[in-house]
Image (cartoon, rainbow, N blue to C red; front, side, top):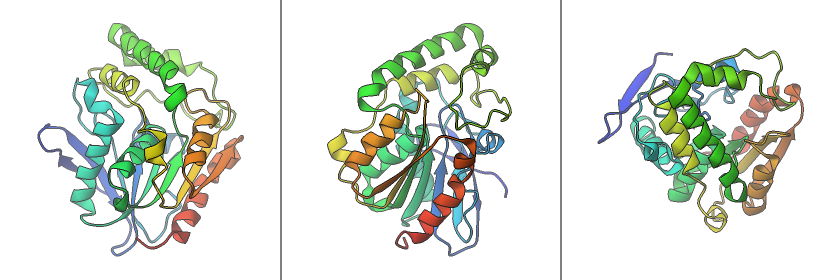
Amino acid sequence: MTDKKIRLPGSGVEIAYDLRGPAGGPAVVQLHGLTSSRARDRAFALDLGSALTGARVLRFDARGHGASTGTREPCDYTWNALAEDLFALLDEVFPGERVHGIGQSMGTATLITAATMDPARFASLTLGIPPTIWDTRAAQSENYREAADFVERLGREAFGERERGAPQPPAVDPNRPFVLPDVRDEWLPSAFRGAAATDLPPADDVAQLTMPALLLSWIDDPAHPESSARALRRVLSSAALEVASTPAEVNAWPATIAEFIASAPRA
């Protein structure tokens, strides 16, 4: 696979992406979380589409993350803005096609936001480790604002070292490598402030989504609480929910996702 880039209209931002799989297969788009990237997901063994075969899988780095360029404007990192970026990329790579969306954390929130904007564009949604939403968002927003201030004072490496010793959910592999946030110092504070300023559309809007949905959560993670997945399960009538408590259960997610997408109606 060779990296390609698309320049977003009106912004000068370039989104880096790759595409794998045979022509004619189902169209799949995969989105990572805040401070992550395609490379970081691979390092953490969280390439959730890795078990897909016969599909065209589009993976990309969100603006400001990984090999994509960014801005210093927090509003460019809200979930609505990231949803617009997603549509621009889909128009380039999968024009006119319905896609199966796979997300985690910020990527999950971006997918839900995009689906409420244009539900006909999505054949299914795989919603991994949903972040804080609705009632739990305010407290996490304060954490993001503090993180933005910290990075401005001391930089990304100091922030990464501070986070290295933080407790991890029991479903996270304790032996996974340490990897710094994959966002440059000049953009990371804005990415955190954009995350602090955003939330999902109202539950009534999300409840209008009827495409097949799979929710994947894990336990004991304040930034990705099980309560978010259960709140989404209550409003998404078509959603199934799986909750992991061990690394082995997380390792099974790619196969679960592949089976789910294979069973969804053909886009």
